[in-house]
Length: 433
Image 1 (tube, helix red, strand yellow):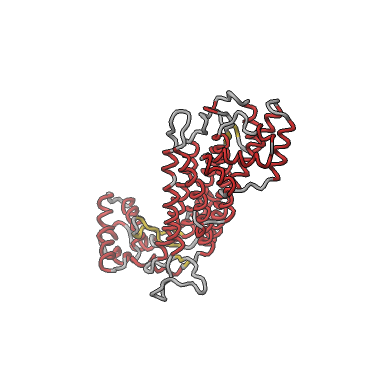
Image 2 (cartoon, rainbow, N blue to C red):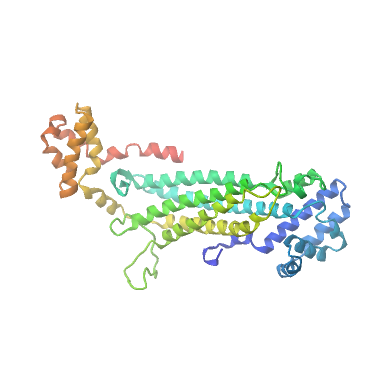
C-alpha cells in the first residue's frame, strides 16, 4: 500500500501498533479465561491486563528483539514481559503463535470488511440518487459498442446499483466467513489449553470459535474473502469503463467532473480526460491480483506451514486499503458525474431511427410475413440508412413489400420513443423496492 491510494482509517487497521495491540488483547483475554477455569492465578490475569493495557508497545523495541529471536510473536511476548513483570510467565499458556497471528488477522479482516461495507453504502447512495434523477432520460443502448435500442440513463445506473447491492451481500458473507477465532494450541488439538478459553476469547473479540483448526485457521475462508474483494473490484471496473466510454469525444454523454484549475495534459491545454475512472480500472486490476495467491494459500502442508504468511502480510493491507480508496473515489465520481442529455438525444438520432428495427420486424411477422421474409425486408432498408445516411422510416414507407403488410400510419406509430421506456418503473421497483 502506498500513501497515494490510502485512506487513514483503513491504513490504521494494518499499522504495526494496531496489530500488537490486538495481539495483547488476545493474550490478555486468554489469560482472563484461564484464570476463570483455574489454569493460572486470578491475580496474574488481572496484572497482565492492567499493565498491558497501560503499556505503550514499542514497534522499534519489538523489531530489535526479533532481529535476535527471528520470531515475531516471541519478540512481542518478550517485550510484553518487560511491561508486565514476573506474571508474564502465565501469558501464552498452552497457546501457539498461530493462535495469535490467525485470530489477529481475522480481527483485522473483519474491521476492514466493516469499512468496505460502509464504502459500498456510499456508492449505493450515490447511484440511487443519480438513477432517480435520470430515470426517464432516454439514451441509446449499445451492444458490442454499436447502437442497439433505447434505454434510459437511469436504468444504466440502476443496473450498477443492483450490482453493488449484490456485492454488499457478498461482503457481508465474506466478513462472516473470516470472523473466526482459533486458540487451540499446537496442531489444533487443545492438548495444553481448554477449549473454553477459545470460546471466551472469541466472544470478547466479536468472533466465533473455529470448529476445527489444524494449528492454523483454514485458508479457504480467506480465499473466499479475497475472491469477494476481486469480484467487487471487477464490478467497480465495469462501471468505470462505462463512464470512460461515455466520456469519449465522439460520444460525450457523461463526463467526470472537471474542477476549476484542473489540468488534463501537460502538452494540450484543451484536454479533459477520464483520469479518475482510468485510475479505478488500474486499481481494480491490483485488487483482483490478490485473489489468486489467497486461493493458493489454501493448500498448506499437513497441520501447518508458513508459506501463507508472507503472502497475507502483503495482500491483507494492500487489497483492503486499495479497495477502500477506490470505492470512495468511485462514489465521488458518481456524485459529481456530469450528464449531457442533449448529446444522448443527438447520438440516439444519429442512425436515422434504426433503433426501431426490431419493432418493425415483429409487426411484419404479426402481419403474416415469415420471420425470414420480415428480416430481409427490414434489413435491406436498414442497410440503406446505415450506409447512405437515409431516414429509416422514409425508406420503409417507400418499400412496397413493407407497406403491403404494415400501413404507413402504423409504421409511424412504431417510432415512438416512449414504447421503449414503458417498463422503466417496473425495473426501478424491482431494483429499489
